[in-house]
Length: 499
Image (cartoon, rainbow, N blue to C red; front, side, top):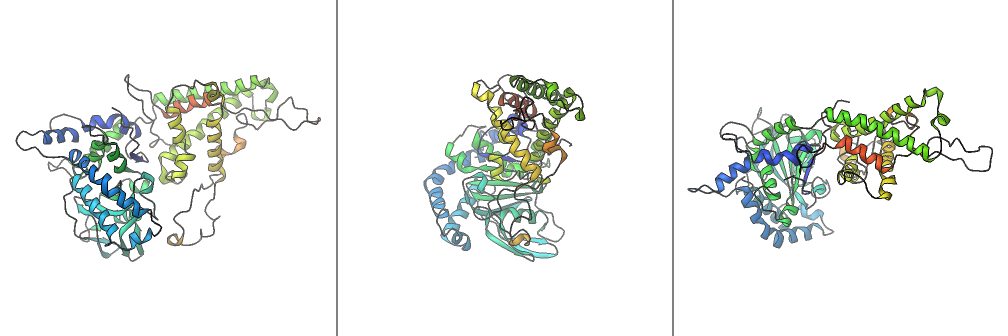
């Protein structure tokens, strides 16, 4: 089985994409004595002939009836009312009470006990605070945020990302779960000199977010839509609900009683060990991609009935060398952006912005080309959607889009600026993305047969790359072929690639 559920968000490749989709199930099912996977451990508990115990993968689906019948309708209806803010202004009100009761039920099903925790003492920058949380223990904190059923809504600072119990600090009021998590990871629990939490669970009604101290600042985390999983009700022993229960359970996040550490650390290590990375297969793919792009440019010239010598620029050297050089540059642009998307903490791309993810990202194009090994329809093969999408992205990276300093409140302190700033690109102004760096791909060269002394408007050679060529290139740069028949190959991880 491949794990490709849309109910999970593996942001910034918290676990490598290939490992998550193709290898995670094997780790969870591992049956080696003394080193069993969590699914194997749960099976032994569930089937113990003397003392069978319910596990999170059995308990979580039992919440479905109440959730669909009463919890979801009530919380969704109230959250959609115009006076939404009032639901957060009164943490003891009916809406907040229903939400915290639901969060408590979810935590209990995941193995965190059935009672709300007392406030926890937190030390930060020499000051002591009392923080109200849903649960704490074993280096884990669970905090109540708002209500959403959408993965992208969980960190929305104006809705579901708001805390039910904001914390007043010396630097101001912490009202958003995302910011509280970052603050807590720099704090000490219980007493001065105490440890910072390792994990923080942001409870957002129909969505759970898992923040890890070692990855949160880099924009890497796991999130899951409990709403979608409960609605589909896949109760297979290694199915969707079982996977959600495993990744967010106390059994996964807490240190094991035998002293072997946290199970999630085992997954992270296995993910690193199995990450596809940039290997010889990709190097061969790069070589092939250069050939594909160069041959496509030559094919476009033939269609225009133009010989390479007619557009040769002696200042740039022989045509063949220029074509090879510019084909490589085009590939380097794609590689650079694949790396930048895998490392959102670098700030090169707005990789965490939902508008970017769905409208501009190379990850979106990667998903498109993953659907088919080859384009068959003539219109699809000869179209320019992939080229146009990349061209828009290249230009926004180079020139920027609404960069800092162009908006009215950009000079205000961070806490006074609007959280809903919209999509922004800071201009890179790099030679790599300069339009003048690549002239043989696109529409940058005047047609040599155009009569500049005539009445005809200037004609430009159309050397754009067609979908058929870029479809091959993007598959070579982003996908690893399956090692076994019947399995997906998965996506190449660029996170550890040095640029």
